[in-house]
Image (cartoon, rainbow, N blue to C red):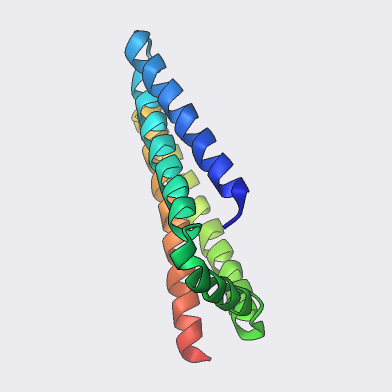
Length: 147
């Protein structure tokens, strides 16, 4: 495992702890966001650091070598590259259609007076983000079955 993963993990963990301390010590309107950021950064930092420690242990050297070789082969497999490209294209097209529908929905909500609250934008954009990720995965899996 690369030493860079350990450095990134410790950095994310540190940023998360700093955000958590800042959220606890200072009473601001950003407190909830800071706690969320802290949770995400601490979780990612712990995961990366744990992975580094696990895979850098001497008893896991052979398994790491096999894993890296398998990942290298999978990453450069021509069929999977083609399928990933096509899945990305389809996800993009579906996303564009989704954005169009979303624009109309926001206009309607604006006309009805529901768009004054910024939380609504965050929820809608969050749903869109998750939708893009899920539809790309579904299309990739279907294309893999086809080929």
